[in-house]
Length: 268
Image (tube, rainbow, N blue to C red; front, side, top):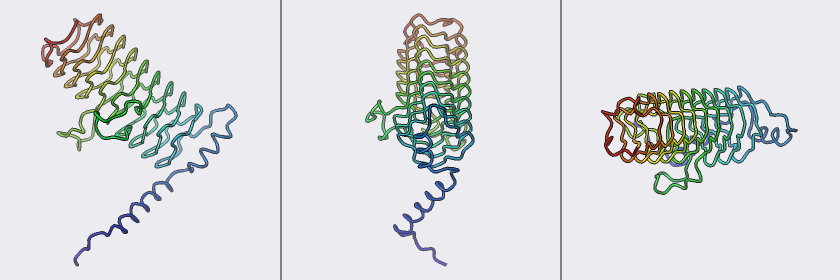
C-alpha cells in the first residue's frame, strides 16, 4: 500500500491532539493553579509531586510555593515568579524560561535541560534581559544543559552542579556544549561543579568559589576569575585567551594549565 503524505490539516490536527494529550496528562489545570495562588493568604501553596507538564503558567507569581518533585516538562514559565519557591528535584526540561525569576529558590537536584530562554535563536540577536535569574538560588547537584547565555547565577549555591550533556545523541554536535556566554557567577559557590566543554566566553566568576570545578575543554576566553578561589580547578583543554585571574586564590594549584589553549595570554 502506498502511504500518502500527511496533509497540512492532518498535521495540524495531530499537533493539536498531541498538545491536548500533554495538557490532559497534568494533575491540575493552569486555571486551577492560578486560582489557588490568587486565593493564597500568605501560606505557600503545596503542589509537591504534581504533574504540571505542558501547562501554560506564564506570568504567574508562585509566592514561595512548594513544588518539590513536580514535573514541568514543556511548561511555559515565561515571566513566572518563583522567588523563594521550593523546586527540589523538580523536572524543568524543555520549559520556556524567558524572564523567569528563580531568585532565592531551591532547585537542588532539579533538572533544567534544553530550556527556551530567548525569543531569538542567535546570541548576537538576543535580548539579554530575557535571560532567567537564579540569583542566590540553592542549586546543589542540579543538572542544567542547553542555552543559558547572560543568565544570572550571582551568589547561587551550585556545588556539584552539572552543566554538561549526558545524552549520547549530543556527541559530536554543537548541542554538546552548554551555552553560558556572559553568564554571571559572581560570589557563587561552584565547588565541584562540571562545565566540561561549556561555552563560557565573557562569563564572570569574581570572588566565586570554583574549587575543584571541571572546565575541561571549555571556552573561557575573556572570562573573569578575579578574586575567585580556583584551587584544584581543572582547565585541561580550556581556551583561556585573555581570561582574567587577578587576585585569584590557589592559582598555583590549578590543574591542566600546561594543556590549556592560550594559557600564555591569560591575565594575572
